[in-house]
Image (cartoon, rainbow over all chains, first blue to last red; front, side, top):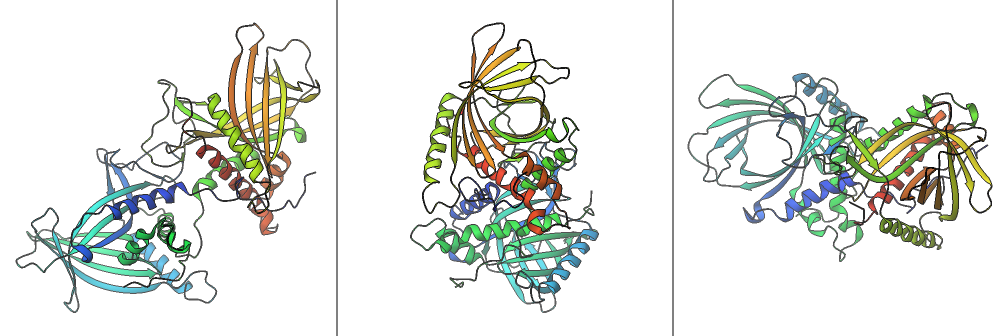
Length: 281
Length: 281
């Protein structure tokens, strides 16, 4: 008979957990994009790192991507002709809303293993204007007060697509640069209204948004539903990225960037795994 | 300015690390194979779970598998026409030998984070005999003493292939059944000599083997080099598999199977990542 209560196992022959290849790859990607970002807007430019929940579709057939793999994996950029559909059904949007509301309540109870979620409901109006460069200028105002929230040129740097064959949804990580610009004059090319519920948790915000777009030429407005996870403070992202792996700083500062990305990936995974079966085809 | 020393981050919005999809998938696979294994040999049959380090090759072209993914992933069984080449170059074999010898020494030093590796060098002779079933009978004897080590019919149940695009090697997990049988008489169809260094660590053994095969019809002997990781005690594998997820047993017994598989996967990953660049083309 074998010993019924063997001593606890070591994590490995080296006594440690091997590096998580998936999280390393994403941390390396985000770090590289930050360190090589174009010098637009100087210190005012904000690096935005976000994950969107959606479905990767073959551009030709429109069908969800199929690959002969059993588990979540990161795709080689530009290797497959894909589009990422972040629009979810109204039901899935409602499902996430209920899930996150529940979590907001349970996370405020004593004994919950994490800090509480905060909550804000905002109505925003985005107006888009042409600019000298490829990217348009986005002016965001609070719908109720008319107050200017921000006026930026958003430069998309790069995306990584994550295929999740076991789940109802895939996800995409994007690194963008938001450069503040002076408010433009003239008529916007189009506007959209965002009904946004923002849940914030520590260094992250989860935005559940219903977007209603109206082209200036008229036509029926288009309604989309989206879920995004963002790293809230660009300043923290930059300061931790600068110290990544720096042997001249204490260990907790050196690893802070990787810990931030780890929590970001964990949160994205939790959101994707809870997409339910209600994802639209 | 952002706070230079923010409090440590929670692991996620739920306060916990999400389940590791990769390790779960492998644990589910091994568990399923154990629970549905054919009833050959009764209580004497041993379940063998092993990981081999090797290269996945396209059967037609002979080239290493290529998929548009950036990180290690598990392939859908039978989805691609592949062969797994576990034979490594003599140099890689030597490299592993040196690496594992070093680890044996360093793991015996005080302060090492894991228990020490043990070491055994054995010379074995396998003789193969035809049987009534598809599988041949393998008789293993100690070369020096002539002592019978085992006489079994080995039934291959199923494999999972793991593609590792960032590494010099891939790996394969196999679940087999070894059924003890009476020693056959007559002449073996072929024999092989195994020069095997076995490193054992807690519940695992790592076998680094040079195999010299000789067909009974003569011809030049073939020399192969292999690296295998095995779960050492089939009895532990079975007893923990039986209690997996059982709410009537204490938590540490309920999760013991998954912890065993986690350490197994960790060890396999560490071996694969240390294959170096010397893998044969």
